[in-house]
Structure formats: C-alpha cells, structure tokens
Image (cartoon, rainbow, N blue to C red):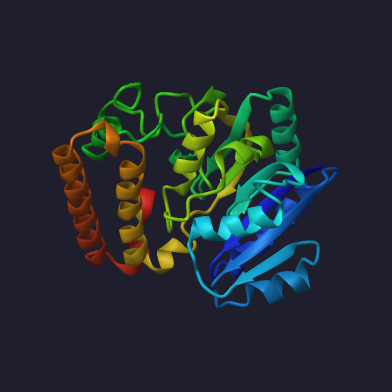
Length: 303
C-alpha cells in the first residue's frame, strides 16, 4: 500500500492554494503519497488552475457544494476508503494551511511507532502567532458546552472541568490524548477509517470532524494531539465570505451533534431546552455580526 492520501477541499479558495500545495509538495518528499484537490462547487476555476500549475495533484470537480463532509468523502472514496483503501493513512488538509518540510514524515513515523493511534493532529498556529484552539478539543457534552459558552472556560482556563471544550488546561506543547483534532489538518489511520466509516454528510459545515474523531475513538483507537509538528492555519478563508450562512451552519451542526451523540442520554424536555438555547445563541451571534463592519465579522468557532 502507498503511504498517504491527502484530501484538500476548496470552495472558492484558489488564492490560498499555491502556498498550501507548494509546502505540501515539499513535505511529500520521500513519501509514497497522492494529493487530491476537490473543487466543491466553486466558481473560481480551481481545477483548471491546479491542473496547469500543479499537475502532480489529482483533481475532482463537484458541480454542487455538498458541504465539507461531502467534499472530503469524494476524495477519500477516490483513494479507496473505507472499503478498499490503497493508502495506509489519509490526511484532511484545508487550502489555507502551510506545512513544514518534515511535517508528514514526522507524523507518519509517530503513527507507525504507535499503532493504537487512529487520529493524529498537529499544533495549528494562526496568522497572529496564537494557537488555533480547535486543534485540541474535548467532547462537547452539554455540561462542557455550557461551561464554555457562559465564560467559565475563560475564567478558569487551567481547570480540567471548566476548560474541557478547548482543553486549555493542557500545555500547548505537550503530546496528549484528546477527544478530537480539527479537520483543517488531521492524519487518520486507514484501518481506523475502515472501522468508523467516512464523514457524516448530514453535517454541512462544522462538527463533522468532531463526529468522525469520536467515532474513531469509539472503535478503540486513540486520538492524539502532536505539537512536535506545527502547521500554519490562516482560518476562515471560505466561511468569512458568507458569515451569516456559516454562522447558521455552525449552530445547526451543534444541534445535529447533540442529537446524534447525547440526546438519548437525556429527557425530551432537556433536549428541547438544549436546542432552544442553541437557537438563541445563534440569533445573538447573528445580531452582533450585523452590527460589525464586514471585515470584523466572525463565524463558527472564531466566535
């Protein structure tokens, strides 16, 4: 089997692909790997651009934007996952990321040395040099989410109880088991994908990486944060272009996630309250965004 299939889903993000693909190509040195760029219903000519400038990439064009899960699944299926994989590992990579030259080799070597790891996520650094908090997350149980959204995590960032959502109590340079990495850059063991299946296309945007990580974890594999590899993440290159749509998608994903993973453990009344609170938070975020200048509007987890 080949070493690695890398899947990059782009929706009108052509302007960021050059840096991503150039660093990816450098990182693929001495690795038996293939990269797929998925143009997920875009209108910026991504496929023609990639074919002309980066002919070593495979390309797939989807006439419709079926969502992040849908786009990634197109690439994963092209690589043979989940039933007949031709690669030992699969990596999901956003077009607004940049890899170091040794990133892939280090991650593969670590997973080879630890066969119980199903998902490995690097340390992601934003443009301002700060940590992308989404790269090491705890499962967003109702209580964990409440602590996060009412501000307890900010008041007690070193508390394993109150700060579980982004696991800020863990040193950002410590290798540690977590519940989820982030789909912007995560490497998955092919055998783990065979057990868990691919991404749930019921999630249009947000939540699908959490869902997949928890499903892989449920099959007996570990999910690990690996900060020895650092990846630059510009973040929000597609979602900021349609902030209202993506904000709604973010909170809809929260409801889907609760319904799928937690609703059976609670009463119908409690679940109804959870969904109404999510709707209320969404309305507040939408109102705040409408009062901001367009360049200052934020979406999803950036809120």
